[in-house]
Image 1 (tube, one colour):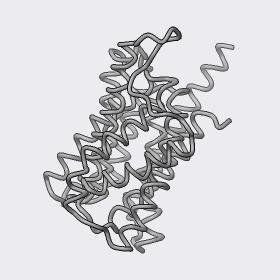
Image 2 (cartoon, rainbow, N blue to C red; image 1 turned 90 degrees about the horizontal axis):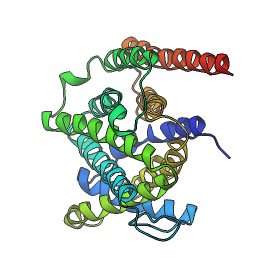
Image 3 (cartoon, rainbow, N blue to C red; image 1 turned 180 degrees about the vertical axis):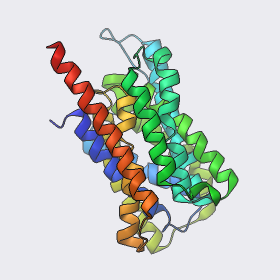
Image 4 (cartoon, rainbow, N blue to C red; image 1 turned 90 degrees about the vertical axis):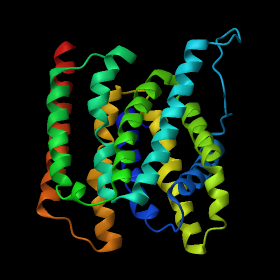
Length: 288
């Protein structure tokens, strides 16, 4: 069985392909989000063979109100994240969209102690500062261009992503169901835009399949597995590999070579995450 951190690492790698795929789809951003979620949600249910639940029941079959509320909050938060991020990708640069979405650790640090009871450690605060400096350096020229409404949507996706991470963590054994429900919510909300855009071209259809299965479908399964076994803040740090790896696909498929600032920023992010992992692993060993 794949462990939590490894599941999240693979998840982040596959997530990182989304930007290059989305740019090649000739549809409205919200329509893309809807079709993508329909494909990925169907794929997820087919592969995991799980049923789509709309409520959480206890062992005696009674409605667990608190768990059901958390379950729906997780699904809605992630649906908002997907819609706002894809829309932002079509309205502003991919760099802007990723940079602003990955401000989420700041919101997790502020909210997690109240919503999950998970206490922050000194190394968490240091890592957040280092990672955010790395991302700013990584996309040093990013916010100088791009549509401002797209930037606002991307920033909003950072808040909703933080909430999704926190609530998914609280879902524990039901995180997979919450992820599948989030795709259903996204597909239903975006349906009017899908109808308005009409039938996609062959090229767009191909990239919709890729973004639906490779960038979201498989990662959704991996994320639901990983989030059960790691802290919310740890999950957000691990998945920050997504913005680090994004330029790799740009180099391969678009021929754009990253700047020195991009490379240094990526190394800074990876370095702080690795140092934090080493420190916390040593503390665990000392407690044994």
